[in-house]
Image (cartoon, rainbow, N blue to C red; front, side, top):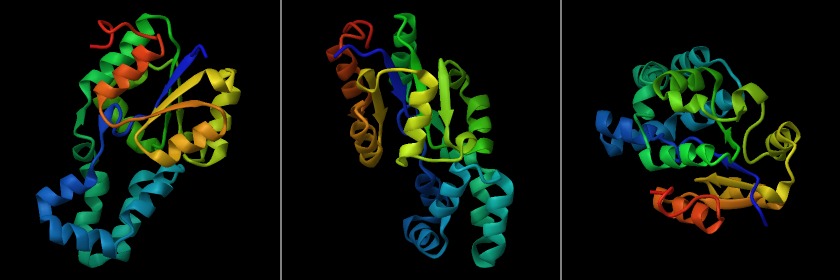
Length: 206
């Protein structure tokens, strides 16, 4: 089946996002594990992904856990250190697809404030033909609604969409709707999938 558009997740596909690594370096792994066990940081982050205010949400959680307040505030104050580098080959693949005239879209769980920070730090995030960002949509992967929003906005046959994401549950949800999916493990494997699909040559995918 011919692919008519490629949909990229962003975190850990185009940009590394690892808050645990930040806290391991700051606190050590054992203390970081205690922090994450005692404070619902990832649950708070899901709220951000659904559109909750960035600073207010982080600082409210810090107020609820005064023993960890300074560390929690880093989720806002040091966020770019969580997303501290891009994945260069993935960025090259995005640009190679666009040069070939393949529509390239984003479908990402990302807060409003955090996406603004990322966009400033990584200007290539402005290069998508369309971007579906969960914080602006008020729904997150793998909820069916966010996939439906992209389908409605892009107007593409679902079986002609190729979606790459690093989380199996997000790929499974896309496949359940008829999309083609690739679970991201390495940029090299993703490049091979794009070559296999006939979207890029081996030279293009380097």
